[in-house]
Length: 375
View (cartoon, helix red, strand yellow):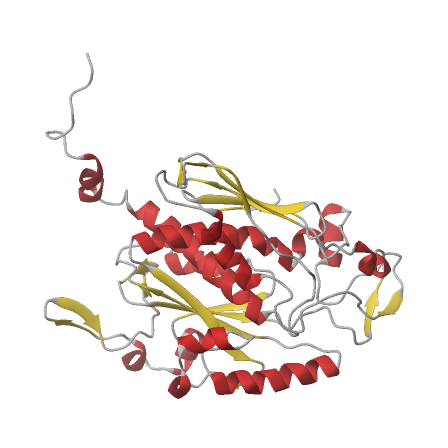
């Protein structure tokens, strides 16, 4: 009922609240034999960890992950993998003034209407801190995909009206600025924009782009389990995301069919395309080229400027939100988009293993090659 489980074969269930004792995830369906240690997961969690610059919340969390089950002697066992991150710097007193007031742009009112109750301390399950479980699970998915030669890479494409320039695009630049932008000059412009937002007690949004490389053709299922449909659901499930595009996205509405169709050709026996308007997916199934998606992320709703809202008693009130909040969500959301994409792609890969007899036989062998049963 709570919608906390995602995936079909590589299935995850996240748990925990922003101001509870811990946040975590249980992964069911992780194959046995994968070398895995806490550092493999920690490097992903460090990318979304708060307090890394003046442009993120100053909540002092190390976000140190603990593997509670599912590994033995450094490898996964095939049993449920349980990962936990303790909460160590909760300041619930910062939220006392919103216990009876609904914050604009938040899930306060809708949670109250659904459950008749809400955890107002940091938003509970609707907090961005819920994404810790997603990232921890995504780190495991990424490690499996790397073994298969599949890479998933996300970065900030824009902040406010500041766009990354294709001419200045360098992925190495992401690590050199607090916005994870592959364009050092655009990052400087973004810093000025966000600094002004902070001075105005306001916030801004942006776009995260994610590219999947080396995913083989044939991943995804027709109708309700299309790869692009599942990717859209996965990324839209991230709290701050308000729109998802695949390939050219909404820009295709201005094109003619002759412009939008991706012409195919063979070169040295290898199938290639002259363009990738479709973002690597047709009929809900991967075509072997790069999968490209973008997540459009709203401005942080927690701003300290006065706002009009209502309270539980039905009165009109004014509120100024206190506490430690990100003036922009986008940089810390980059790894979340990356991990939700990885989880979806891996689940699709595992599902595709049963779509053809030759794939099943390559794994288990044919009738002639199967060993005889014990008598």
